[in-house]
Image (cartoon, rainbow, N blue to C red; front, side, top):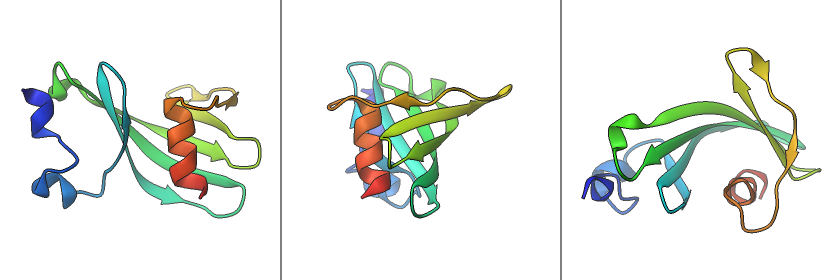
Length: 99
């Protein structure tokens, strides 16, 4: 399976700067380049579809650790802050970034 090529337990992938965060039914989620301290942090999020890993995409994210919120930067700027619910992909990312 293609997803096996990008397993977080793969020794080649382990040498990457990408950190495996979590998975959904269709994709694996990774982060790298965590920057900042205090309330606001930034990181890169990469989404790797399990069906076709070549279709991966990356977006810059900003975390607000005080309000447990995320927002993402797209070509037209930052979107609005969204509070993350427990057990969501965003919640998993905030646990890694803010703790």
